[in-house]
Image (cartoon, rainbow, N blue to C red; front, side, top):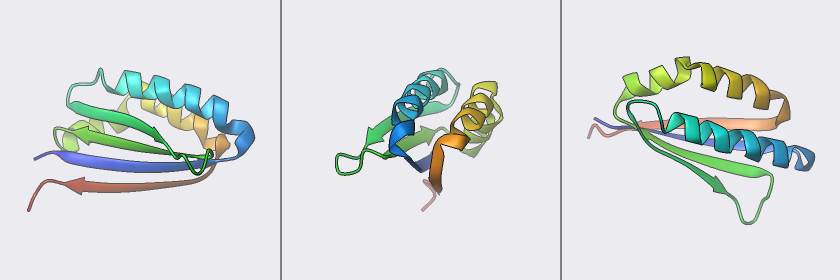
Length: 95
């Protein structure tokens, strides 16, 4: 059963360059994890201060391992002060 995570980040204009730099590194590191199938970073063409992540994992356990990783903790701590909002949605493939 695959597990999907969608995260929307909003940040102030002066934080964009820093956030983009860090999220691209996060995507690269995440794709090296066992069980991480997709980690896409999407920018909003209408709103330069918003980024959307689309992540797919083998299962919830693979996502939990991602959340426990050192690179996730470093990313989360680094970008938290840059954010004005963050929303997370999850889905699994059980029907």
